[in-house]
Figure 1: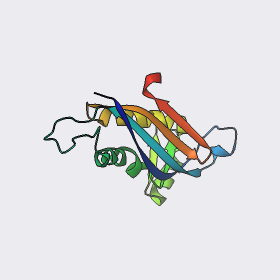
Figure 2: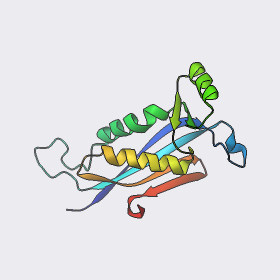
Figure 3: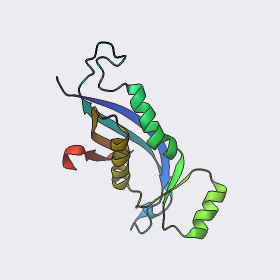
Length: 148
């Protein structure tokens, strides 16, 4: 059977700060992200399956990505876990969507985190092939399974 790649795009808006950065990105700022998720697998061949001919139902992929990434990050502020506690507490009192991560929230580190989460959530018959995360209209980061 032939291997097929399928891709679905997701959009979300997120703010972050990169403490210690030597430029403007050390300040809180936001981006309109676009995440492209590409899976690889063989289409279902069981004639009685409601997924006949599909690698994975796009609806099922959407449920996975929404649950792991877009619902959690859309319109959120992502901060590192070493943000001063008094500042973090103040932000959490004033705003609902503060996400604390253990890494510098660059697009490079975000995409590694996304790949780990997605791989763990996929059904066994499909694999994550690659991710592309657009941070701006001219800048993106890529992650490929074959490189990892």
